[in-house]
Length: 283
Image (cartoon, rainbow, N blue to C red; front, side):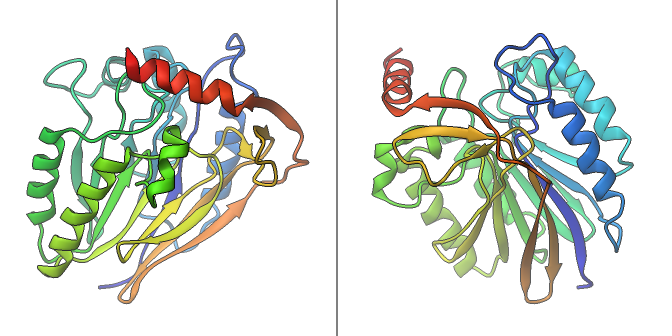
């Protein structure tokens, strides 16, 4: 196949000035990034936006997001994140749904790439889940367009190992991740080409090999995690996007950081996060 270039964005967190939990002007950042995307050569075929599209999940924020993204002139593949809501997305983006709370699982083919988008969100939870019905849907989706390379999009990345239990808000829950790994290994053994999994959520650029599949996490457009602080979750000013190229030999991702002074935006105590996750899980 010829080379296909596309853009990976994540954690756009589009909102408004009245949102006290929004620590940067994400709409302005998105405008700046789209201006950079317009300079990319060759012209990208599409954009992937892998979740936390808005900060509040309300329909008006999604309408604002849609208006900004339409100015790129490119097709956009959307996934939902834990900050989004399914009803808000369906209403604000004008997407038909079987029910307001139905997972937004979908697939499409653009420029020779079969893009499979999995809704890893579970209303009320910070971390990710995949339900039985979604696994059944994913099995069918992986068997469609068997001759095309497949790109999987999910807001939450799979849990890399058993240590995910220490921070369950960072990934898809461990048992679902293991089941996903078994399914994808089975499909690759049957000749399906899986280019990689594109994710967000943890607010820093990261590339991992997981079950023989490249998992790419983007920093996003809201804030950046300070990886040098392990005693707290410290968020600083920072943003990036990915220029992705599908070649005959596989997927390449080049990260494009935006200028930043790494100003501190917010700090979350880890104990607070653990207690919040445990409370939500119990509810």
